[in-house]
Image (tube, rainbow, N blue to C red):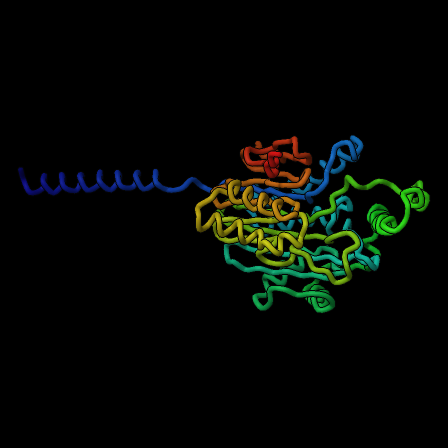
Length: 370
């Protein structure tokens, strides 16, 4: 065999080997991220018999709109951070949800709002609390995150920062809504009932006071995965109705009600004090990152543990492969999701009897045997 032919044969073998290695490498590569958004609009005692069909349609429309706003960002090639901000702002601007415009009142009849933001790509976080004039607290939380100087601002200083960064500032009356004010008053009437007879309470409560028990009382939030494989989380709330003046819940506490890293993003809603004690969001992330648990497995365990100590609520969790869960231990959770798996159309749920995704899970403690 001539030297020229041998050289050509060797070159050919090398080329085939390189092609084979290249194809093998491609097969081993993970599939491209599937842009996904998951939202929640609060969890708690949510029963179908407590709302009219018109009220249910209105709530579903609000959830659909928020999910659609976030997913539109992802489909256009936007970032996960932009998507979760868009989704949460939509709920903050909707008076039905307990965030922004629809926030509940504290014991002094004041709306005190709070929010947090976390970018899983960088690990950056931002939060703000005790807000009374910032129209969209979630945008302030993001501004704080992007400042690279602070993580958590509160009260007048936070509001000054909002003005400094050009965010919308409104008069406190912007947040007043009839249904939240009546919930505020009803709370005092119920407190009075502790020392009066049921007959007296019935006489005290005005006939024209509406029943708004079907409305979301918890936190709103969103988690998203973009086409680049990055995750982000945004969470916002008005807190507990008739909470003590100055009370701070889990929402602005990084690791309690909010978390995002390179592998998983979490947002919670429910009894904030329990989320703080448990460090719920970070707890779920650690189980996923260190033990390799799926979002569904980690979320379920966290909610069962919360239920076992008297807590109530739910979480949405999304990982970098696109797996997600909406897990709650309360009667229901306002929730939505959208991705290629849903045909790029938002799927919406409210009651525990609904299952809008494979890991849309209502969990409860097993009944003890007598």
